[in-house]
Length: 102
Image (cartoon, rainbow, N blue to C red; front, side, top):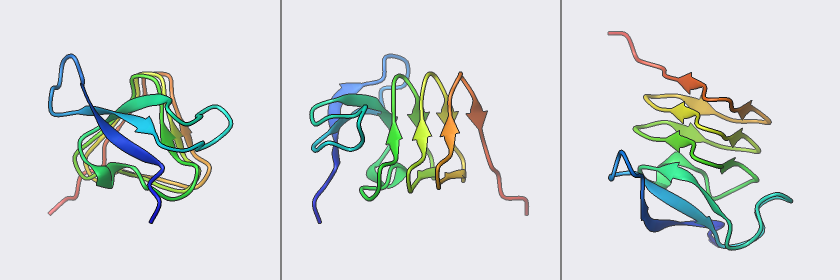
């Protein structure tokens, strides 16, 4: 499978276990090859398929997932078990958590 992004060595200034992503191909019109995106904890946080992207200083971590054409930007923080998909846009410093209740 062709990868659309890689996880760079650029660590988040406050959370060093998070790293910035870098586009390996043109992902969408505003994300050309080489463009730096937001921060992830692991590759499972952002799908390698579709036009989904994490931009700016946004963070996706824990078991949160971003799929489809979803866009996460600004200083948004997506974590826990959250799933952002379809054509969803999350921005403006939003925080989304989803916890399983036992």
